[in-house]
Image (tube, rainbow, N blue to C red; front, side, top):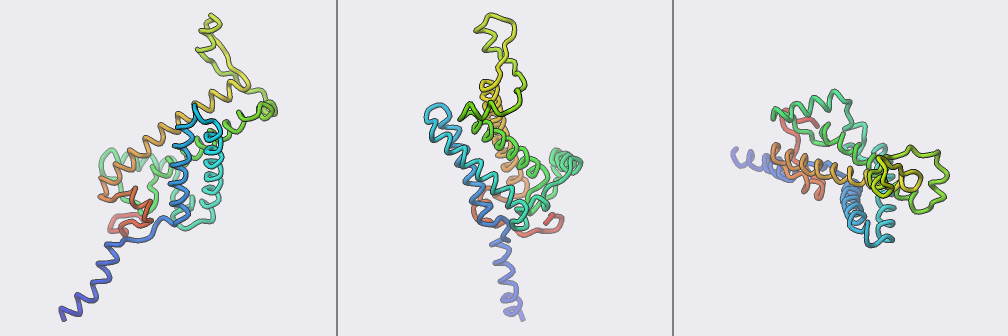
Length: 220
């Protein structure tokens, strides 16, 4: 009787150890490809303009793929599965501060909000970079909103300066790139916190595609 019980429970133990498939291969390729492309674009911004531009195109292509895959992809890749409203996101953040947030098998509400923020900032960064490649592209836009630029004010010896057209787009491009970098840092902090709280290596899960099966109290 004991041998029979042990044989029956062995597959379950093995399955628990191996975990369950959450992230599909295309989603993982997108994730790490975006990490590499953004890092390359950031590192080559001042020195290798051609490489910087191509990295930006890769970022734009990956974002386009993610938007499509968020609709037709696997279960945990779909926006409908993990996107939540502001109240649910704020509630999750409050639970985090109290150390009682529930584990999500897919993206938790805070992670989902971060994904949206990153996609928006990266899209804006890629678009403004594309505009900067050809002055004619900027000329096709409506008159841009003027940006106050202290640097111009110092050069002109005035109290305030304004950058329009190409200068405004360039400044917006830099602001969005810096904001994206800040979001990446916050994202890494969130991944580390969730990994410690739930005793699960989330970075490794994005490599293997597997996570620990949902337990009591977890949200699958």
